[in-house]
Amino acid sequence: AKLESMNTDTMTVARFVLEEQKANPHATGSFTILLQSILTAIKAVSQAVRRAGFAQLHGKVGVTNVQGEEVAKLDVLANDMFVNMLKSSFEVGLMISEEDESVIEVDLKHQGRYIVCFDPLDGSSNIDCLVSIGSIFSIFKRETADPVNQNEVLKPGSTMIAAGYALYGNATMVVLTSGNGVNGFTLDPSIGEFILTNPNIQIKPKGKIFSINEGYAAFWEESVTKYIHKCKFPESGSPMNARYVGSMVADVHRTLVYGGIFLYPANKKSPKGKLRYLYEAAPMAFIIEQAGGKATTGKKRILDVVPENIHDRVPVVLGSTQDVDEYLSFCV
Ligand code: AHG
Ligand code: MN
Ligand code: MN
Ligand code: MN
Image (cartoon, rainbow, N blue to C red):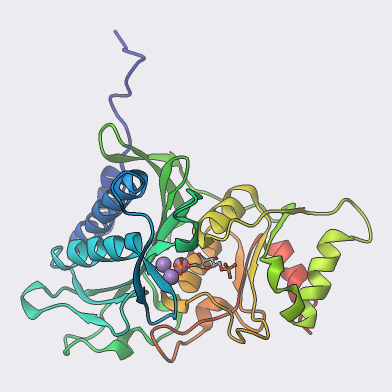
C-alpha cells in the first residue's frame, strides 16, 4: 500500500549533488564534501537566527568591522560557523569572509583545493526586527599547488565554479548553481535535510517589480533617476510595483522567483556602490545568469569584473533580462 503521508523517496540536496558527482567522470567527491560542510553551517545559522530572540543573540557586539559597520552578534556567530565547518572539511585552502579584514589561510594539515568567499550573515540591519536575512557564498577551485595566496581570487567572477545563498525567511531555502542551472532546496527542520522543491529555476524575461533604496535618490546618477522615473511613469502600460527589503538575499530571491529588477547602483556617497564583489555581487550574478537573467555594473557584465582587493565593491543591477536591458538603455 502507498502511504500518502510521507514521501519515502525525497530528493535531498545530498542525493542531488551526489548524482551530479557520479555523472561527472572527473569528480572525486571533494566538492560534495565541501558543499555538505557549507550546508551544515547554514543549518546551524538558521537555528541560531530563529532562537536569537531568547538566546540573547540579538544586538551588536560593540566593534566595527573592516566594512565600517557595527558588527552584530549573529554576524560573529555565523562567521565562526562558516570558518569552522569549512576548515574541518579538509577541502578548503583559502577563505574570504566579509567579517575578516584579511584572507583566512587554512593550516596545511586541513588545506584543500577550493577557495570559498562568503557573507556569513547578509542583511544584518534586519536581524533585530525579524525581517528576512541570509548567507551568500562563492566557490573557486585552486589552480596551483603553490602556497595559498589572496591573488588567487583577484580574477573575473566568471572563473567561479559554484555559488549559492541561504534565505532565512518564512522558510529556510538554499539556492545553488554549479554552472548547470539553478536549483532551490527547502529545509525540512524535522529531519534537518534540504529537500529539492524548486528544480531548474528560470527567471522571467521581464517582470513588474523594481527594487532599489529610494533613500539615496538625492545622490543617484542621472541614468538611475531616469530609469526609476520610467518605472513609475511609463509612456504606456501600468507602473511597476516597488519592493525593497534591504537584505540582498531577500531582494534577489524575490527577483529570481517573481521577475523584475534589483538595483544597488553607485551613488555620490558610495561611488562604487555598496555591495561587495566576491561574496555578494559575483555569486548573485552567477546565479541570476544561470537562471536566464542578466547582471551588470551599468558599465560591464558583473562576472567580467576583476577585483583588485578582496573587499572591493561594485554597482549591481540584476534581474530579468528585458528590465536590465531597459536600464542599460539609460546608461549611455
Ligand atoms: P550585510 O548585512 O552582509 O553587510 O549586507 C547588507 C547589504 C545587503 O544585504 C543589502 O542589499 C544592502 O546592504 C542594503 O543596503 P542599504 O541599507 O544601504 O539599502
Ligand atoms: Mn555587513
Ligand atoms: Mn551582505
Ligand atoms: Mn554580512
